Image (tube, rainbow, N blue to C red; front, side, top):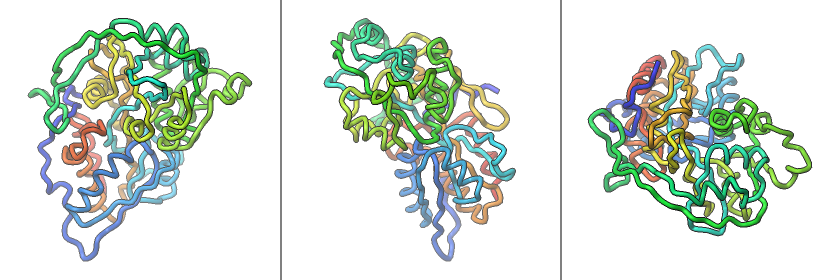
Length: 379
């Protein structure tokens, strides 16, 4: 079924009673592991949840593969994967809850304060090895031309405002001209070397929007999806891996003329620029909450709650690298009240509203209704 257009940055009328656990004799510490994608949101929201309930949540990273593995072994209360866990090893009592939504950013280190514009075809060429210099004609063309970009209206806290249907309010559509001289330097590509849902979503985007260049199906293992031979001599030293979003961002920050992909908030800490990506409507959009919502609102949702992204959506402001992270939860948990409490807190607007600059979105519409139904199965 099609996700309602109200899958946006909408404020949900969710009572604190949904996530405030009943008083307990002793505080409960929930645990989990997996995807690095939701970590910035979890770090912010677990503090507010602890203040509201007296309970805590401890999360270890390791990538989506680690989250699926922990779930299979019955380790942890709430694990995360950025792509659906469809393997035969998944326990029959484990359910998916698509609960965290945000953009993946294409980040770079160049000696410029200007924002880089990249088409999906150019991104695919860079990461696939057909574009190896920053002054390649494709990059030059993306960055020396007029282009349009949709800007969303925000409140004083930076939260995107919505209309009565829950759609982000467009403040304006601007036409800009960019002139950027690109250096004659080799592009240093940095990818996720661990099993990563971020890689899975990123390579799905490349395959979905530039299939003639990115000729293999998306995969959580970037090397498996790479359209050529990643071990070819031409790639040695030019294409390198690091484990985890924090690590790829840190490595890119230390590597001149590098490019990588990760959650947007890692860019600032590493001193990296963040690219605008061309969508199917022809506009170049930054990885923000409004554009992510417009993109996710065009996705399809199956009975399991898995999302199938529509990379061809003509939504003018859609950011085509918006993704969700799935909470993997065993319905037979021995701490159902606390697990439900924390999941409901993540769903509430209080959670992403704590720090809007992270660009995480509140799940709403039919997907929100699905999440509530899934949470109700716990215990």
